[in-house]
Image (tube, rainbow, N blue to C red):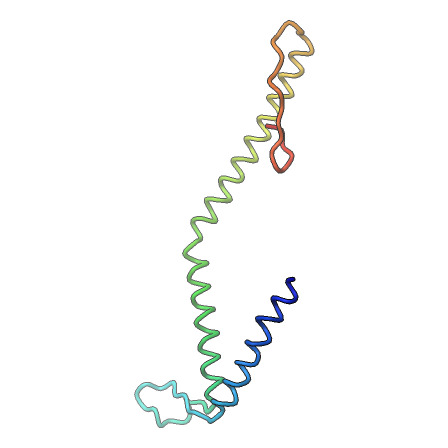
Length: 124
């Protein structure tokens, strides 16, 4: 199913890309000098489809980078909370082990509540 979906999406996109490239193959001059656009030292002559696709790729990369950087505090908080959860699971396992040891030594104590396991297999 996944191969079919990839083919159903990628083949039309490839056809659209080729048609776009053929329709926009005339050359344009891109100047990087805002004061003197006639200076050929800071300009490139490229096919139009190359310019448009390069700008689209740069835009996606800039947007992805900005999103990744803006979510930094959430990733840091998730790492912190995961470390806390790992530490609490370890403490809980130690407490249950000490409770089991105490009950083994003194059978008159009430029985511990039944143990459960989470998705990672840690005892709750």
